[in-house]
Length: 338
Image (cartoon, rainbow, N blue to C red; front, side):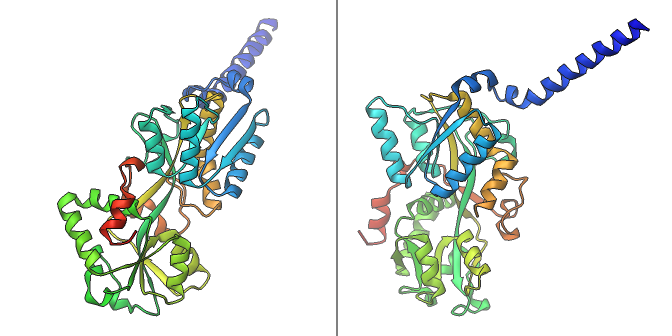
């Protein structure tokens, strides 16, 4: 009887140890030392996203891991990049994790400022939306496509292909484009190939599009009837359409996708916490949080904001080009403005 009782006790202990090990397995599989995480107990996140979104993300993360104190610094993409590079030149490495536009993060990789880290969640992201060596993984995307004012463009005249923008009716200021869309320009040239892309852009230039600065402004002006067509963000059009604006967008092939990756600093002061934070953002919980912030998550097992924004149903072409190899001045000169 005593032997049976002892056997049950040993079995219970073994099951307890097995369950404990199983619960910690994801962290161990990700190469994260939980004990070291508790010792590091801090996180510095540099981001180009909205301050309110960064604040909420840090709060959710620290609620999940209350022994960690999280801080973030938020700035627009160019100022954020400049701060990181200035700090690096001065020998200061203050941040653990960064999130910004894909070309900016890839530039940091090329400058040797990122550390490789393959998250356990990487398999939930499509190829082309993570670095094969683990230097970055996409979190959410900005899809660039053709949008139109439904009161100004009859359904029979809606452009369905990129080449449809060459119709004479869209000449002389009928198409609006953000003057900072050198990323779209580079993505289209890459997707079409150098020769076809060059011919395409020359024909688009001959249509004499107009330029404004700011995606939100462009969508608002299009909704107000300033111009019938715009090359702009699909999700912004979708959001304004949902509240009654007379605008819509077309699923072009390809749809140029501007990514927003997350990456670990090569000089992170809290590398284990940084890895844990990256896993949190890339997890299904993190992707759902991004969706609640009106973002378009790149993770494939999370329902999109709307069915039309489902990446599984779109022919996406991510712009995986360093910002140093994007030519903003060349883009502006090509279309004849400074």
